[in-house]
Image (cartoon, rainbow, N blue to C red; front, side):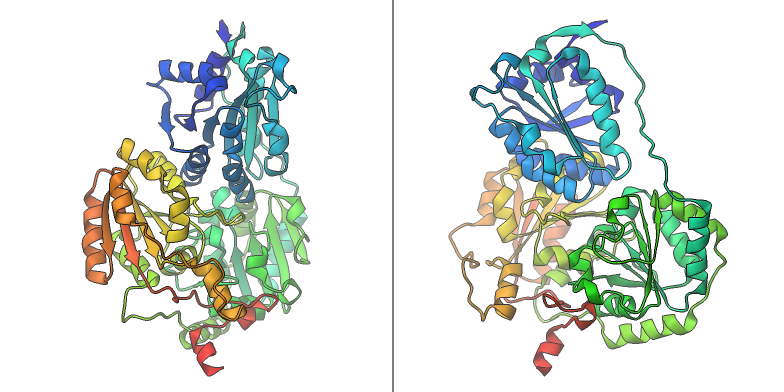
Length: 558
């Protein structure tokens, strides 16, 4: 059958199982939006307040559901406003397809109104990019783009289509969704060597990264944990892969990881690394990281092997497939003496905070209690992000959604909207600092327009908390441009954007506001006032080994 390019876009999205698109229209993409209007019974379009919000919402949708997220924008500034969201998805390996439209083909390269080379701009932050100048290539391009986005190590792909292509016609033949299955690069001997390393270890430690979430390998990781009988720590991106109520779980690893996890990594004789890339935020001083251990790394991306830390054995392949085979061959182990040592250290160095007033750790514990640990938690970036990872107990993967690699302030609210659209039966709460909240709070208008019941919890300390913490500890308390004392009233602003809003100054007010928020059919904002000098502990100083993590008690001793 003969279709226009715009019709082909919609048909290909339906082929790929797309049910929701986040975006913002404009002149060059009008033909596509006209077809979206005609197919609104099949594809839901969420009009965000800003294109960056669309990219973050598509990202949050993808992380929560495991599907490919889709966002759309027009040419010029519409396309460039997607860039931060695309980079966020790229750094965290999120499957996302961004569709933009450009000026007509004869006008390309002539500095035409709202013309920009978005494929060139995004080349370093996408898995692949296409500019479609021929309608006969459009369907195949879209199908391939989705395959690339979801295959191997996932990531964003951009498709830029000239406006005349969206109006041109060609023959269209429907296809079933293509799957690109990359061959695993490991051998039977690789599995055997890995099993041999594990079985010969006396003090193993499992280092679980975000790749295990992407690979849907939580069951396999948990089976491995039960067979190895070892302590396990997770990165920021892996929260919930292991049930954090499990006695083997020692907490997050790295700069703001627990002393116990950092001790375990530093004193183990085998570090079993699963879908993790040895980020600087995890390793601290890379030369001192796991210095006493052999390192076994399992990862789908060969480029991650020996990139940041020298390892002893690599198994390159999908972590779910690799662990299935390892679990089949592995003899169950017991490491009572090692686990007793870990538990003793854990008892000696517990996590703690001031219980005499409202703090973010307490807010997270109350939220955990009132949601029975079943919520999807999204975050912005900063102190609140770390507290959300430390004090809410995650028992399932895809329930903690945050910008890890890029550290994007303003990410969380858009991501929460996307996560709620993708998982309508889940409670979704975004934890944001006041600095982050003011960046993209306009997306409250999106949430209220569609009655999306997300809970926005603003950790309001009237400062840029994480930057201030560094200024306190390492810059002689010179608070250069980190104080946010001004005349903005977040409660009134939120109400003006169509949301219910509460100011919270103590735990009683918190519980009452949360109870109201959990009942609402639309968005609710809690402006939670905390002390500007609250700090995230433990912490590792720049250039130090993660074993040198310190907390408030260490500072008092000094």
